[in-house]
Length: 86
Image (cartoon, rainbow, N blue to C red; front, side, top):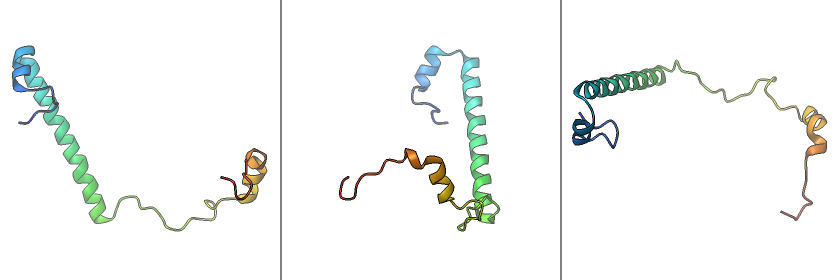
């Protein structure tokens, strides 16, 4: 098995960790990698099936920006530079 972290060389593990700690370290790493692989497989499956959330290209009327309301709320806070500057 490869190293889970760059510092976790076999020599380091044998020099600084007890055998039980090494087994726990590898069990944790294997469990983490299995979970990560399952999540990846699940996301790829959703993408291939087309069941994942899709962004709609059109916005509904409630999502369209309301310019009038925006200017009512923030119009006095907008700083504009004169044309030709900036």
